[in-house]
Length: 173
Image (cartoon, rainbow, N blue to C red):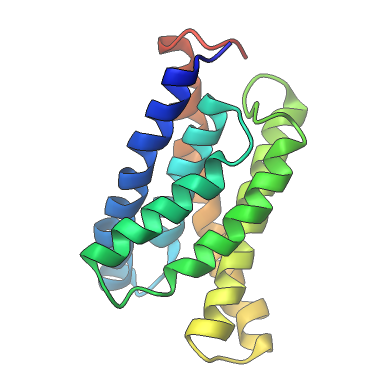
C-alpha cells in the first residue's frame, strides 16, 4: 500500500524532474545526434517511475501537465511539449489496465512496454504534424518511429529504476 503523502511527494518530485530533463537532456539529443530520442527518455522516464510508484489514476497526466508548465517557464517557446502531454493520456489509459503495476508479472511488463512505446509514437506523430507542420506520412513513417525508439530507451532505464525504488520504498509488486 502506498501512503497518500508518498503519492503526493512522488508527483511533486517527478513534475520538476520531467521539466528539467525536457529542458536540458532532450535538446542535448538534438545537438549531439539530431534525433528526438532523448526527448522521449526525458518524458517517459518520470512517467514510468511516478505512475509505477504512486499507482493512482491521473499521476502521468499530472506529472506531464505540471512539468510542461514548469518547462515553459524555463524555455518559453517549447510548445511542442504539449504533444507529450497529449500522449500521456494514452499512457495513463494503458497503465490503468494493469493498475499501474509495471514490474513483476510478464503481462505487467508487456503493458508497460506497449504503453510507453505507443505513447512515444503518438507524441512523435502529434509533434510532427501539429508543431513541425510536416505531412501525415512523414510523421507516421519517420518521426513517430524515432520517438518510439526513444520510448524503448525510457523503458530500458525506467523499469529497472522503478524496480529498485519499489524495493527501497517497500512497495509491493
